Length: 211
Image 1 (cartoon, rainbow, N blue to C red):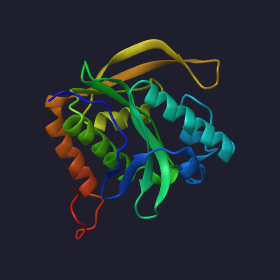
Image 2 (cartoon, one colour; image 1 turned 120 degrees about the vertical axis):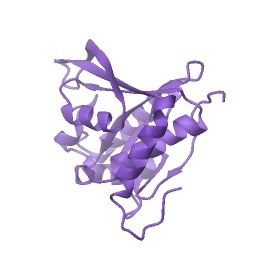
Image 3 (cartoon, rainbow, N blue to C red; image 1 turned 60 degrees about the horizontal axis):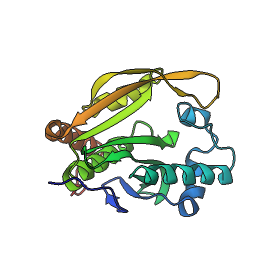
């Protein structure tokens, strides 16, 4: 299978729907979910947006950045309420090398510890490996962000190493080391089964199975 670049698509799950990020359409819901929340934005490359307009500007920048390197930004919509509660996306895409990065992910704090992250990653990874033909997915995070590192490891990803003094933090003063993780296509079946089990554990017994 020849790897192909991400294109606008809706990825539909049991608890969440990932749809192309639109600052105008999703801005109000996103601000309500996490705008101004310092803990949500603590490890992000930008400070917490203080107004809806500022959040829309950040969303537009994230969308443009993802698309500039061949990726896609997605709004994460909670299906129960029909509202965007965060965003995520594909970045640093190389079809020649069959690889991409999943990143720039955040969710409103009310959705931490729910099925949202597991299912969002299940949808993104399934599409990347099985539809786009990718052979490698990577993630990177601040070396001080242990919660993110634990969440990535639970996906089945392998910690590869650390890039020292890799990025200036949003405070404009301190520097972060970046911890890199990856998962390869031949590791995906095992990781997929584990993710499916995690998502199913959050569902009522009579809920329909995910496609």
